[in-house]
Image 1 (tube, rainbow, N blue to C red):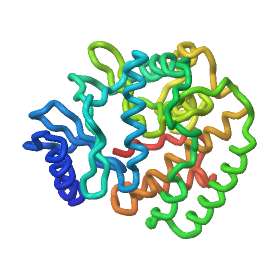
Image 2 (cartoon, helix red, strand yellow):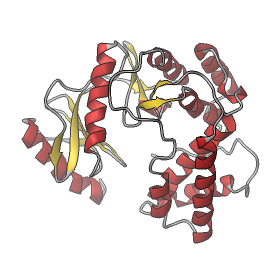
Image 3 (tube, helix red, strand yellow):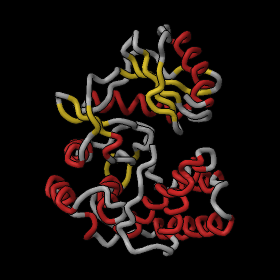
Image 4 (tube, rainbow, N blue to C red):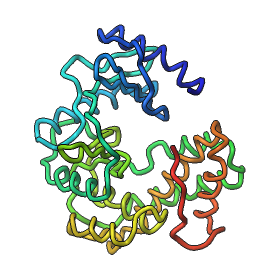
Length: 294
C-alpha cells in the first residue's frame, strides 16, 4: 500500500466512527482522485472524496436515490444520513455489490439506453462541463516539460471556445458524464452503473463519445464491438459533425489525467508523455493504442 493510502486509513476509520460502522479490516479498493474502501464486516463501501467536494458528495447520494426510484440499475447509497465529514473530506456509504466482473461495451450502452430517456429531475445537477478539473490537472503535471504544458493550456482554451459554439445534436438529458466500461459492473443480475460524480445535464453524445474514442483513438474497442454499441443505441456519434470536438475534449481529459498522476507516479511518466506527443502530432496517426492507467 502506498503512503497516501496508509494516511487515508485514518480518514475511513474516523468516518466509520461517526457513522457507526466497524472499520476493522477496511481495505482499499481503489485509491486515486477519490478513495474507495471496503468494510468487510459491514458489506459496505466507503467513498472518500477530495476536500471541498461536499456539495458533489451530497449530489451523488441524491442522484443514487433518484436512480433507485426510477429503477435504473446502479449502485445504491445506504439509507442513512450522509455524507459524513472526516478530516475535512466528505465520505459517502454504499451497498457492496455482489461478486461481479468489469462491464463491457454492450453493458455501457444498455445502461445509457435506460438513463438517457429519464425525465430531468429537480436536482442540483448543473450543466455538463467537459473540462472540469482539466486546468488543475495541467498545473499539477510537473513531470511534463514546460513547453508541453503551455501547449496543453492553449489547447484547452481553444476547445473551451469551440464548446461554447458547439453544433446541436440530440436533445439534452441527464448524462452520466464518464460513461465507460470502468464505471460499469456486471453482476449476475445484469450491468450496474457506478460513479455519479459527473452526472449533469448535457448532450447525450458526450456519454457516447467515451466508447467511440476507445475505437478511434486508443484502440481499446474493436470495430465490431463499436458497431454493436451503435446498433444498441441507435446512432453512431462518429458521424455527427460535433464528434471531433467532443473526442478532442475526451482525449485531453485522458491525457491530463495521466499527466497529473505521473507527477507522483514515475511508472506513468512514459505513458503520460506519449499521450501528450500524440495530441501534438509527434506520433503516428490514430489509433494510438494508449495503455490503461490503473
